[in-house]
Length: 96
Image 1 (cartoon, rainbow, N blue to C red):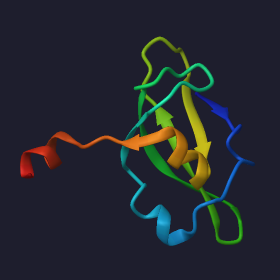
Image 2 (cartoon, rainbow, N blue to C red):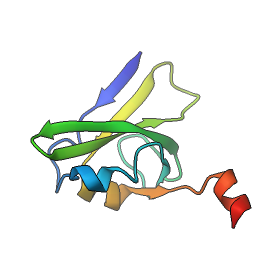
Image 3 (cartoon, rainbow, N blue to C red):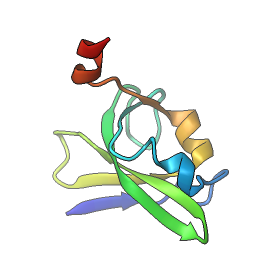
Image 4 (cartoon, rainbow, N blue to C red):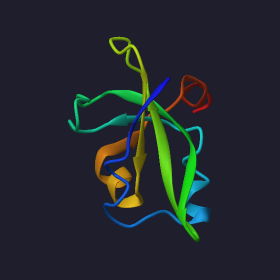
């Protein structure tokens, strides 16, 4: 079961199709507190949601052990740039 928080749905500029490509599957973490998620909370971008023609949001599922339900949040481009940072994977770090 998912707990969906659509609070980011209406805030800021959305993504276009090309700009979502690099986000899908990415590991991310919060860089500051918002809606009960402390800074440093990690998650994964599950995919995208097309809210209107050629305007997309990214869907992030958070990795939290203290919750009984899974939490997914939508992020516009502006919100993603303000609240998220990408986390380098262990595989990518080994290749560098």
